[in-house]
Amino acid sequence: MKKSIGNSKGYTWGNHCKGWPLVDSKTLSIKQEQMPPMTSEKVHFHSSSQQFFFVLNGRATIRLADETFELQPNEGLLVPPGIKHQIKNNTPQELNFLVISEPSTFEDRIEENF
Image (tube, rainbow, N blue to C red; front, side, top):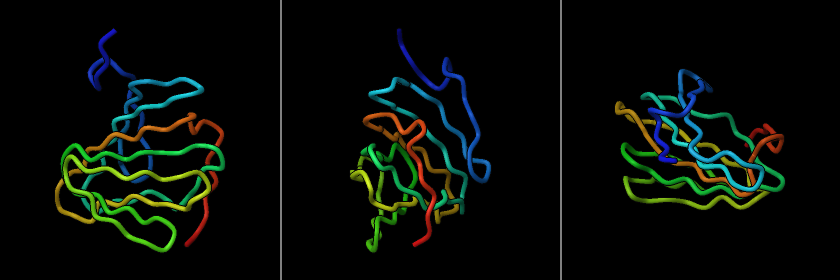
C-alpha cells in the first residue's frame, strides 16, 4: 500500500507540531513530521531505539548530548540509543522531516534536561 501524509492518521505533538506515521511496527517506525517556525521538542532520550532524522525542507537544529548540528534539506543525523537529543526549528520557515526509529520508540522515551 502506498503511504503518504494524505492517507495516514495525523497527530499533534509539542507546540502545534504535526506528525504522520508512514510505517508503525514494533521493530520499525517511520514518521513524517512538521514543525512550525520557532518551535522545539522537549529534551529526551530512548534507552533502546536509535533514530535517524532526515530533513525534507526547512532547516533543523538538533542538539545531541553536548553538540549542536544544523541540518539542511537532504541531510540527516543518526541518534544512537541513550543519547539525549532535541530537535528545534529556529527559523521563520516551516520544517518538514522524516524520523526513522529502530525499534519503535513506543514506550521508550525518557524526558530529561541538558
